[in-house]
Length: 200
Image (spheres, rainbow, N blue to C red):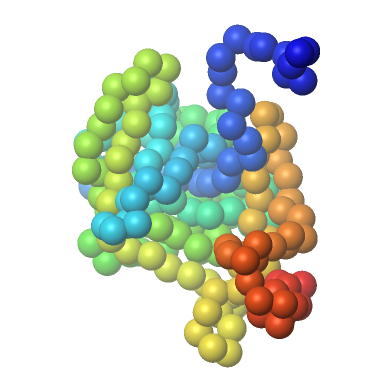
């Protein structure tokens, strides 16, 4: 039987992925921002994330030496800054100043969060794994912040207000409408109806 697939050379086909701005800094120096799409959640308890950075990037040494990084999730209003921070080097550009971004101090961190972003995850480096083109920084999430405007009356995060963006093979995309929720395939009809209305 003929396959519906065309076999291709192995590559980074996984998509879409989040586009984030990662802030980092060495003590006494100006902070920097690097835009990354190679980012992922890897553990719930303890909460952990990973980022992958090329050795030649300016931020690689900052993260390795400081032992920390802050993942700033990006919304549509952050799109131009997100792209700019991915194509300019912190060696010769103050990206906070160039993009009119506000550094926000986080207790226990040298690196600041980005005030204009909807959410941040403050991570401490647990390990570094050399992989090839990129090194993987395994980070334990020890601090987290959410813009007050995203919190609803019940104290939950309303992610629809964040207007988060995704990256798909060289292009940025807005997220579309919600199609379901975890467990919707086995939910009782009344629960399904109610929850789907909440997601609209």
